Image (cartoon, rainbow, N blue to C red; front, side):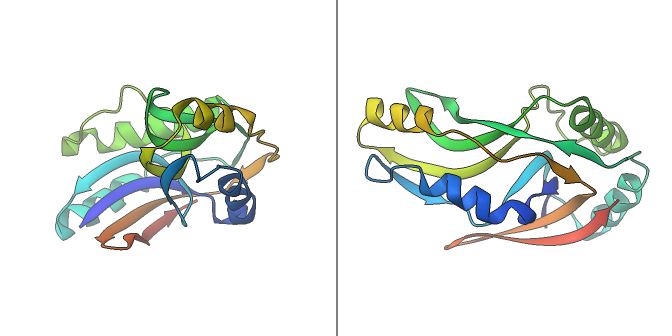
Length: 175
């Protein structure tokens, strides 16, 4: 199974869809996401037995609820070659500590370490851009006005790839 560790943002779905709606899709061909999460660690393909061990290890992560704010729209990999549009989280010690805790308890499994953790929520995947300058201006004009959200848990999520996009299923919730 294909797994990742994430913070779920389903409570902000309406607000995040509102941000997506401000992206001018006449300037680019987009696949807008319908499930919103902040990935703490992508694990990739994991056997069922190993997944059970991953759950046991993730239970060891020290976690206290914290507040997180979303602050700006950005892109990956770079502005002149956009493949992903995201909304970023304001830098927060707590989210970085959580991500480090996940990395630490899972290091024995040999998953690749994420040295460039950048807390964000994907809004859309970009297939092509028709007007690069116009698209960049459109994204820069989008103001993120979502207040703080209380983060009460994190999850191990199974991702099943389908022709209509990925389908996500919580394997375990940690609070």
